Amino acid sequence: MAEFDFLESFGFTQADLAQPENAYEKFILDLSNQLTKNFQEYIFKNVNNTGGLAAATVAYVTGPLTITVESDQYYNYQDQGVNPIGQNKFPTNYEFKLPFVTKSHAMAIKQWKGYDMSHAYASAAASKFKYGIKPRNITSNVMTDDVLNRIANDLAEITGLIFDVSFTKNTKTWQ
Image (cartoon, rainbow, N blue to C red; front, side):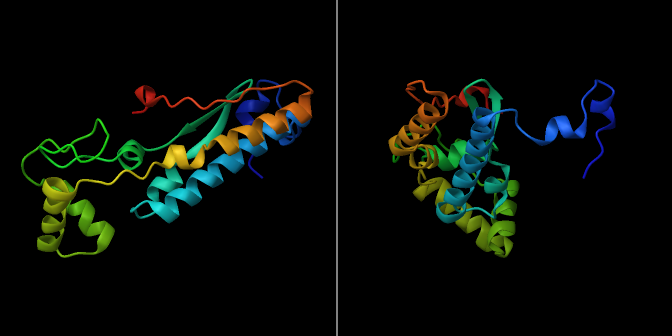
């Protein structure tokens, strides 16, 4: 177990932090952990990456009845897709802009796929000029109406109140 020297100076003990105070807090913590797992599993199965995107995606409690899901900026491109230069292939705001392949783009593909540099440049050019990046619709496939209804039903059972649960996608705060 980690030592909490800094927190102890504010009067918190490790025992204070170990367990939620009530069933609601336990539910919210378990829910955030389950959502993290759901996002990571979907990303591993459906998104072309080395696993870094899944590892960077986490759901955590940020307030009463609020769970925030954050990820790497690359999440937006995989979720919504990226159009090839000069084409409107996917319903997304993202489009490759530079009319050439950068070394960093080719290096990323080389590291991801293990290609030699000439093959990495060719692959980068194909995605940039012809294919783009196909949308993976991560958010809409993980945060389905069924999932939201199940969360609302569980909250109603725990609290005795009726809930209408929604998921708001706020990409403006992502960096």
